[in-house]
Length: 346
Ligand code: CIR
Image 1 (cartoon, rainbow, N blue to C red):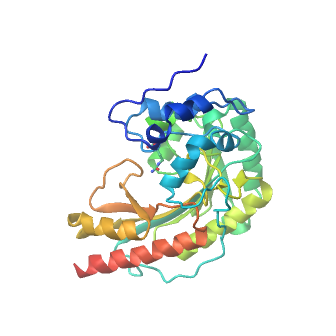
Image 2 (image 1 turned 135 degrees about the horizontal axis):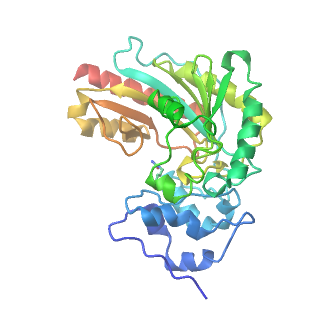
Image 3 (image 1 turned 90 degrees about the vertical axis):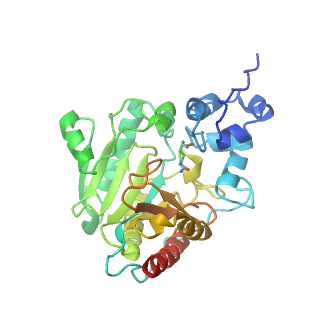
């Protein structure tokens, strides 16, 4: 018997609702990856959360080609692609170092800079579809690789498994540990067995960090409390090169690095700053225009789906596929220069 096409709630405006037509659903609903991941599991978050913007999470690397019929239009629309990423080499890899002048040398606007990439191992299902045991395997492989980082990035790995609620809460309060996922991630299965085998790696100066078993197997990041975008990017590139030599990451020539949310494929990179813009806060249309022209996005002060507090905006790249990591940082830099110049002149 054919499964009935799911009814997305009225008012939902997600890409999954738009592209999962009854015909596409009928073609895909009976399919399962070798690891047992289905379309119904992939769309659960979008069905349970009518305010989803995308509404689909991917449970293993084989689900990308298996569910191509629905993923191709979603990926093309989100990443603004002309070419078909499933059959064309769209991904551009370039982590060569950058050397850009600091966009805010006096530190008058930019409060912090953070660049992260998502990476998933080829050998395990992705986080929405992992068992507790698989998360433990991932944690061990990652810990072994992290313990061999070059000296300037070396540090400690803290597993949440044995931390206890008080110590864990203290780390979250210090923004050193990630919190349990939101309702979108909950519905996707990302909180299953939390906090088992989740953890964070912190370099001694805390400027290089790795989250383990959050939305993706690894979120590898470099950060600083100033605006030196180049230093942050180059530090990330160094840590990533080491981890890429130790671990085999899921990669496709068209789709780039695969991730559990299709918005994150490609470079899987988000490069951004927290920036205080009291004048542009009162002229948000002008800010939005610059942000759109440079292919950037604005998030709230507390991250995705939060509000902007006290004129502190989180501004980062919106595109990850078809643009290289190196170019992404240059685009962010150019956008920030324009934003800061306008803020100064208002
Ligand atoms: C959603 O569909 O709204 C959530 N699953 C989050 C999607 C990823 N975030 C984003 O594109 N900004």
